[in-house]
Image (cartoon, rainbow, N blue to C red):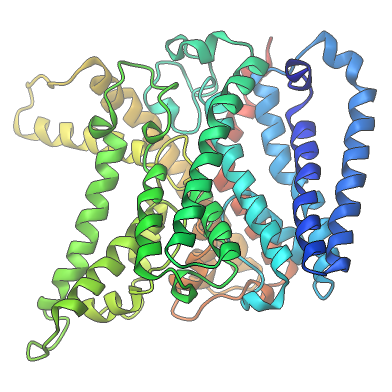
Length: 507
């Protein structure tokens, strides 16, 4: 039965799962006595299931004869980000009632792409069942990224895997083992069966840990789902408004580590001998950034930022250090949560609005095949290896580089592909910034919005700007452009170019 279902187009399967997911907030709203919100989700889910069933029956004969290819699954993934939010926004729009459908659609695009930027600055404006829907859509979007990265992007040498494999981006690589040999439908089944229990189990453990730290059950659930999906969605405006305190932040900190490397939860797509987590370049680079950046902010207290006569207690110093460490990892993983001690860290370092630091962290992003966005640590590592080798050749022009076969491949071809992606990212950033500027925004606001969308880090609009950006005040054109930036940042420009390659569609 599962094998037959997976023969249907991926977007149809996702629409059916979205319809089933709507019954959860319907039940929650009914239990809370919000019958109007409950009916919105119940009717939307029922109509969606009926439409998916009818469409599935209509194309069942074609599906039985031929299953989707990798490039068709990639196209379905893109269509899911473009079209599925229109359906996801329907019950949200009917439940809120005092907003436009465009705002509801943008909210769902932000949630599905795990960007986490919200149209509603005041969390109390919408009911808790609607917050649950935002969290569920973001959580499902994170699981979609996990599964599609392993079952769709990895076999086609996309999504960051092009740095380590031998095949050209958009082409299969035989080194990927069973994920390359298996049929596309089989790969989806394998990835879903192996990753979904891990994803759900980690969410459950974090939910229980946050409740043990003193957080309310509902808030703990949303924060647990947002942490695993790195969406940054919160029903109370962030951890600084929660009851879990330092214990809750400490638990979340360890779970954000899953966004630094895919080896923290799987190694099925490692194309070479499995080196282990501690030897993984992505993980080591991420840990280095999390250690060095807070240390620089901490030491800045004694480098002319603060009056030398000012005295601080050990407790204040530790609070400032923890606030920096947590916030740096959060923005590096593109979750965008701020520590409750982040204000103390800013005061300690003497930085009023360290927007450039947060923007840089979000732009670097997390690991390949994780829920994090950005350029990705593996691409940054490839560029670092290439730069290191070029510096060596300046001193010793005739030297022979010392590295393993994998290291040489990453340093040569991997760095070349990583540089191409970085240039595409820069061009996308330039284009989005210009488009938002033409929509009536000033340069700073347009740049922050473009970076927020392309890096899937919605909280940047509040943390990076001196004055928080309110999405609800944007014009319709700017909202549509921002939604396009979020979709482009999630799918990546290189994947779009692979879709336009005629060789990828050739049987």
